[in-house]
Length: 494
Image 1 (tube, one colour):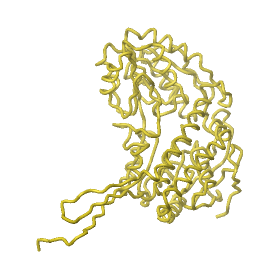
Image 2 (cartoon, rainbow, N blue to C red; image 1 turned 120 degrees about the vertical axis):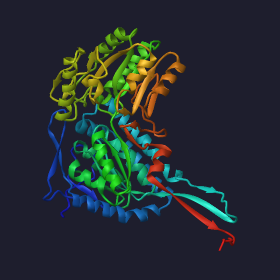
Image 3 (tube, helix red, strand yellow; image 1 turned 60 degrees about the vertical axis):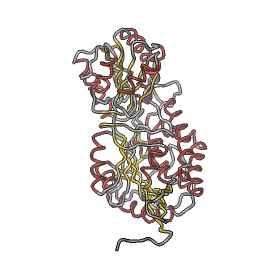
Image 4 (cartoon, helix red, strand yellow; image 1 turned 135 degrees about the horizontal axis):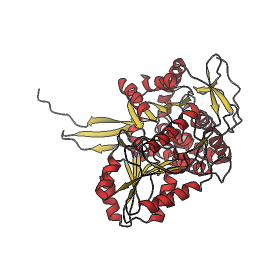
């Protein structure tokens, strides 16, 4: 295998044409390639190798070889590498913002949160090297000491999505590495750079030993399936659709790897009769349209009490119509492009079907290239296409309800259970409703797009299993070991 011409620049026009395996950049050679395109212009950004199953096998072999020695390093050595990655993300902020805008259509509001949130998250992950603590338990056997240890699981396979790629890749990669594991990362095809090869360059610059992080760009059916099913994978961390997550989970469990699955959502924004309308509309606008609605925790349905319904819908539609649509390199733009044609076509189909089912299109509903206007639909019921499906776009169906019980019933009438929000001027009432909603995360007098590095992130029902962040991801990326020590002679019955 020849080596590609990979420079160490972090820029959109840098060289990105290689896999990263065992500390080496591997050229495409006779492999198929993936054309990474700018969703705004549809121009080609780069051609990256499409890893084969054999490439994935080599990546796991390298990760397996490197893991033991990495686990034996001191916590401060591991933490130092991870902290340096956070410093590099800060140093290359301008270049990373351009990468996110050009490769994935990230407007300034998403760039702000993805860049800043990633830096904060990586600094927090560095502390995990010191936080994987065990315990010391008494024994019922005289003279025995029980020691509980936390050890790295081994090799973590990471399959990450295209919608917030740097952050959603590094939220698994950084904790795994800080805790003494090695990693094989397969980014989404559309975000091969910012979700994968960028991390390879950052960790390489930070001095990570060869083989601890390996990045294999490729398709889901070949590279992704092989990562999920590889017998050397001990945990498979996947973020993506529920349909794909079922396959990943099956492949992982088949070889007894733990599947950490963060999947889809159909997230309700519940506006109770006594809500502050200004706050509810402001929160609903951000929660529906941040990143063009292309985020698992975005608001999928607005559930509004019938006494506030007309005014809420009017104000919300007005706000949506004022949002600027265009090239994300323009800092004034709020709504950038949809990632690809299939995603665009699916959400436009949901809009059309919902109108055919009797809903009213208040604003938006049109597409131009990969741009979809912020869309507001009223007179919607929970079973209409844009409401019962995860539309994953700048689409806001507004559904009326008559009382708190019906609001809870509508909120829970979905196979998903990822996030929700509830608005009321009576915080106790809002909390009562929040407690009855089946979701892993519920936010009172806010909206659904919330992530903090020290609190658990994940869902229930078909929204996945396991939790990211803080002590919860430490539990998933380490394994418990019980060692007992008999400190004085023990009497046996025979």
